[in-house]
Image 1 (tube, one colour):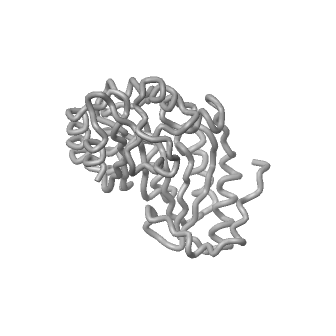
Image 2 (cartoon, one colour):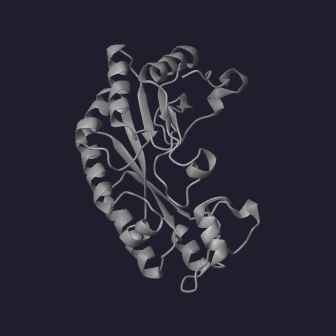
Length: 253
């Protein structure tokens, strides 16, 4: 709460348009830092420390929303937190604060798939128009391998509940996680198209240096390259004895 707002006056804000947002001009905000989850491919535990999750108060968050509306005439705000929805109580407080102040603004966020209809209804009533969340893979064993604490059933439930309350959905998927095979790739692709999100994105896994995944990949000689310019989500960085890079690349593209 003590941190100042980003120095947006130094940038041509109208050029910084988030393509996920449906209304412009728009702006990004961060209402929390860190993540309590410990997925082995994620930078969060490395950058922010294990389980070092910090939240701004609802009042402080909505103050900045008003600042953006009044100062920059924004029509939509995107919350680029690692997961806006970690603390459901705070999410509902933010929604209540927006409504109690009579703020008329669209907003969207990166969240998780454990949100359910009661909270989603409040989010939509407060202006939430769209939700991003990570699925990664349809294979439950791979999810266990990378310590991701969500399931396919969570993904199905949040998509259904979002449709019911009028929130658009965007799911992200990652190919090439430990345990990936041609069969699991096909399973994930089939699941992605059956899930029914409005949009989706696909990338190859990037074992960023410092992550647990990078150390595992290095130990097992899975790394294709240490040219850091290739670590961009589109190039294939990991190959397995039973899964070549071109198979992952075909899935992504």
